[in-house]
Amino acid sequence: MIGIDELRRALPTLDRDRFAIMVRTVLKVPPEEFKALRTATILRASLWEWLLHLRFIPDAGCRALLTEMTGAVEKFAKRLDEHPDLVPFAALEIASYRYATWPGRDQWFDTMFESALDADLPRRAVTHVVCDLGALHLEVRERLKHFRSKDAGHQHHAAVAPDGANGQS
Image (cartoon, rainbow, N blue to C red; front, top):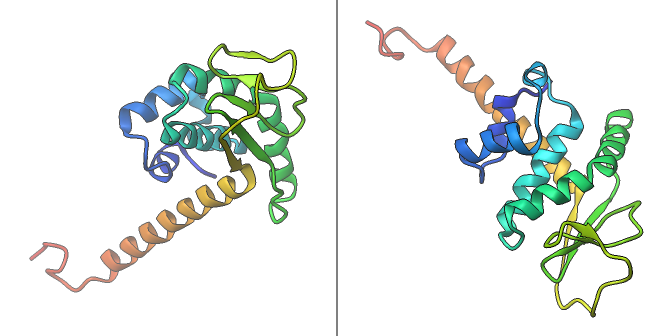
């Protein structure tokens, strides 16, 4: 189980305030989920951090994109939960700094106008940025594992420290 405090540590580019905004207004995580976050919630939070660190889609566009991707993220998270050792490749592609597409989507989503395009891109995209959702999932899990082992090491060292080493006399 991964709690909200652990997740905050695993998303280092979000300061406390931006993390709190994400939890309350973007992801709308219910308080009863704080102690045991769902895989889909962790993945959406990881995507939010990734999108913000790119800095070319405004917050409103990122929020609209995450909302639009909810079904795809839920489906991907379900696959991860059912087969944790088989992490597939699934790409979120962003073209020309504003259009997005992902597996299962047959239209581009315009993050600027927060709507689907009726046709293909208006012109050939100069820039394509891709996020491998599977790799993102593994990266965040690795960060969480690192913090857990680091915390366990600190607890172990504090428990076996000689008298006076913990500031006690």
